[in-house]
Image 1 (cartoon, helix red, strand yellow):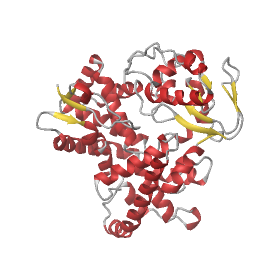
Image 2 (image 1 turned 135 degrees about the vertical axis):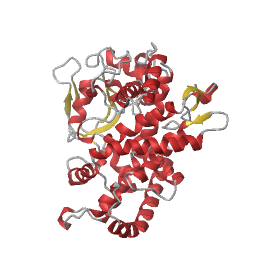
Image 3 (image 1 turned 45 degrees about the vertical axis):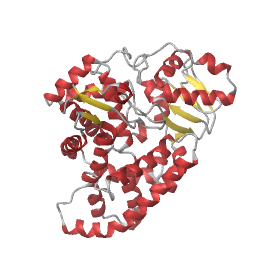
Image 4 (image 1 turned 90 degrees about the vertical axis):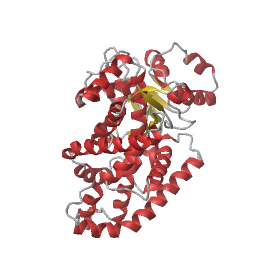
Length: 423
């Protein structure tokens, strides 16, 4: 994806289209030119009320909607999550699932673990790069690194290793693709998600009894699943076997494809910017993690892994009240909170088209905002930039020639390939 904005005019074509085609155009542009579309909307129509979804593009409006979780709810996710992994916290607002399940997982994923997580990612990445590099000095980073390492970390740190890497990657892709990206409700995508959930349930149900015994006999077992299995809660809490299984499956669902996409897309942005790339390579070699990470997250701002976050309003609500763009949204509106756009909103983010790695952390919405901020954000803050750092440390700092040297989505929701060569 180009990091420079063109001057394409979207709104004239949108306004001239039929209502049905307006929705088709909107989704096509969101898939292919989100930042260009957002730039036009922010300046001309920051709250776009289409015949389909409502699109919020300003920083303040995105944060407002995402902080009103009892009005702008996560209901759209439930029909895809519940049949696959069971009733899940990510598809609930203001319920015991949020309070109890999220509280338990937050308590078990310890901040004090994070240095160890980064070290685990570094070791896993070094091994994956050594195994995946071709004899002619090429490395296809998606299949050989950015998907593989998060899957292996799901086993090493979270404790859900699965039957093999390939199966775990299939389960992860199928669930993530349907739950978060299947806006057109493609039945084949949904069915793949259901099958992945069923397979995970059977697998976990079969292995957990033996796993409980091993955890009981080995006090050194200290991954997240081991901590869950040691957890003793009274029956009145309701954290039973079904809740245990659902939350273990959830450890995989959100941790692989988004991580892979973020790593690939940030690397791609850096490769197009010689100055920041040189700074990142130097920081990587000096083990200056703070500088490297700032460069990484700023790069990702120019091609975020999620162009928007989906919500559904359950009551009428006036967004941006008191401003010129004040708009009353009816109940049951499908609302796309464009975090990717918000991070380029000049009313909040100074010089948004400049590459500035010293921006305040609160200008970044990579993990969402509000009640449903990413549960694994602390892990992602370590894992995702470390994947990129290990790529540069191994010397893969140039694109392969031709199409192979550019991210290829192969018509899907996530990057499927990007080949690099040593610089």
